[in-house]
Length: 159
Length: 392
Ligand SMILES: Cc1ncc(COP(=O)(O)O)c(C=O)c1O
Image 1 (cartoon, rainbow over the protein chains, first blue to last red):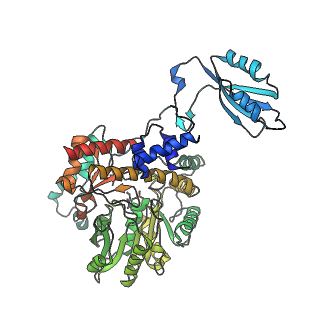
Image 2: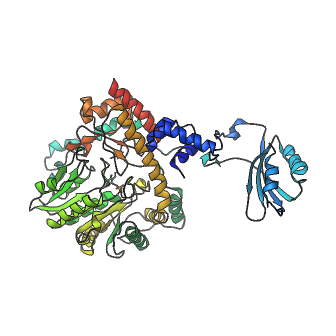
């Protein structure tokens, strides 16, 4: 992967000036390249990684395994697109193994998610099975720990 | 009895030990350690923790009951892994059963190498600035340290002329460290060949401390040990502290032809017995996934190096572009301060710690060592404070 993308994936707020110093590019060159990535769709957006567990929000997240029958033309894409359109669906992945699609779905409470599964999801033509698991706690998300472990103290000067 | 009371008994301490000056940076360490909120560019170790799979291998070994001695030379399986690694990455051939000794860090391996070859009065040459232990270890072994100064103008190169000017009939060995702590100098193929030629021409032993071998940024590492005729006269030293971020595991190794390995072994078996088994198990795991682990850290260091060097240029501190290791060695002469004054002033006024260049020998005067194995955020903040210190 391009070093520029690696830097932004680690810290999307890094300034173009600092990125330029790290990569030996001018600030303008960095801006132009970021703009290109945005334009050609490699960069899809910028988000903060929030530890929602500490916010005490009235919200649950469910991980749902979905079994679907692929269609003659288009395979899983049409159904996956259709499912992706629901606002409560955060992520959709096509998987190998016992099921086909893996969804991350949010709702206010268990009942709301259950309603979504039985009324919206299971009734889509081609969906013929779901298994819902509720998430209890997040330890690590997108490579980031949700709690900072106490760093082991190091010496401040060594030869 | 307290050490300072030695006045009372003049013969209390060994002479060769009294000849070694008190470490120039000890006072500095002591002040830093009492201060809060210091940003440190003074650390000679990675800010990364050792990769988790390496730590996990050590935990697993402990659970299995790995709490015993190993053979004096170290675990044979580890020596075999090292032999394969050196062959693949540097083209060096060492026999695992007779030519590799696992030590407690390169620190111990340096001591073994020097004691194995040094007779009283033998001269050992090395470049300066250099790692802090070289001169003292030679003195402990009753040898004569012969530092050869290098300069920023000359890209901290050890030139043939400078070496020829200091070689004498008593010269026993040349001790090298590339990539270099503290300057960041690294060898290209031609420089390495020149050094090998010099060693051969004067029939010297080469001790080569290549602890930063994996950390080169613009060219791949060349070992002087790999040139024709060098194997039989070289003690090659390497370890896991730097590229794998394993300083606390205390694990290194020395490779040399059987006669030299036997000699080092004589000392090691009575002074150390063997390196810690848990660290040896961790090292076996470290050699299993070198590319992933080391590349991740190295690409991070490269960005930090570029950032730091560009920032030095902006705040007007001339600095040699380091080619390896993780240190930058900016020249602070234009501030009118000595290296020590600069380091102490920066610490007191701005709470940034870096190491005065004189810690690495008199030719380090006018320089300070800034480690970029420190988080980018810390480097950014340190640069702002340095700019303020220089400006006001
Ligand atoms: C050039 C050099 N050699 C040897 C060492 C000691 O390393 P170890 O941790 O393997 O004893 C260091 C550590 O800073 C070093 O910079």
